[in-house]
Length: 162
Ligand code: GDP
Ligand code: MG
Image 1 (spheres, rainbow, N blue to C red):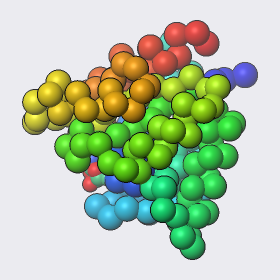
Image 2 (image 1 turned 135 degrees about the vertical axis):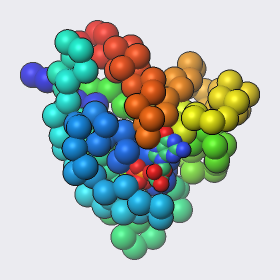
Image 3 (image 1 turned 60 degrees about the horizontal axis):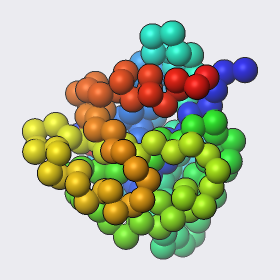
Image 4 (image 1 turned 135 degrees about the horizontal axis):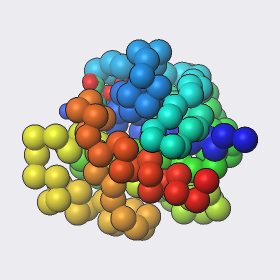
């Protein structure tokens, strides 16, 4: 069985951009406004010797109402069915209340979680990322999905046990 990797995080952190990179498609819609991805979206990916299923989700922001409740349910379902969770945060936007809510859920879960700071291009990433240690999820993996940076190293770390 191929391992399943779920991409979770609040809307607009770059989950769909990463999904498209990993699957080499433009299947997941990328937008400047949050909440575009409402259902779970599955794709196949191969990075080096690692073959896996990647799952894009709509995002959770901790204050769900209406359609956003559905998005949150999709994200929670994706976490449940995943072998590895990549939890994306936005290095440019910094730490948000929504990130803390998601982190709390992930810390109470048994799943291996990798904290991924996206959008590290063109900024002082090390200082921007420091505040994410407060999420209590350990090491921060810096990537720039739109620039294809840091992704292979991340996948090699995340899928090492598989
Ligand atoms: P999602 O809601 O988490 O799926 O986020 P999207 O993938 O739709 O991306 C949201 C916005 O962030 C879009 O405008 C992307 O172009 C932008 N974005 C994604 N990855 C990066 C990145 O690595 N660097 C920068 N600067 N912008 C990015
Ligand atoms: Mg999306």
